[in-house]
Image (cartoon, rainbow, N blue to C red; front, side, top):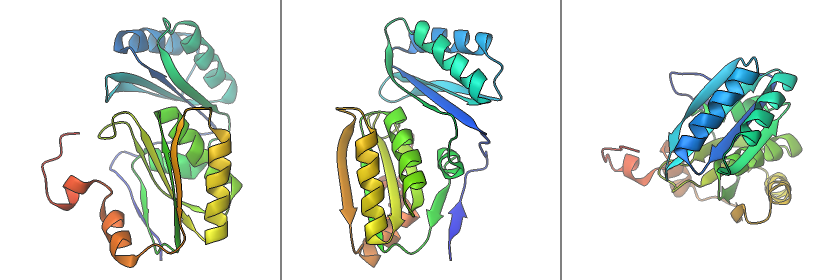
Length: 208
């Protein structure tokens, strides 16, 4: 049985998603303003993440989101760290961005660790579209020094295929590590399914 654990706020994006990551907070706010002024968007989220970066997430029709991306890039003030534009984002990726996690038995586990938030989202979308795998969780930026983590589960061959597709889709330097664990031990599986944050497992007061 598969349980989906979600946060109170659910994200709805269909069909297109874009996310721009800026190394300068001031520049990110400036670029985000130009994006929403140029395009009619259904979803707009923007704010700071660790370590001192600024993210702008938008969603809506393909044409409008693409136009917003162009505006953001044109007005990045040379501070665009990374970006992604997905004309047909997979619904499991949107669920994961809302904080949704799948609690299910794991036969094999695949992990992608990326340098940036957009790279992690691209990996998640690529993997779940290209192979018969479940997207367990996506973690982004805060508490990770700006990095991204993507977790897949499924049969060993399917997880291996997803991880290879993810690695091939990323730009040079964006992939930090790719791992496949063919037989994930039940003890550590239960621990990580509860929460992948170490402090939460021990009851620490999390401020990230």
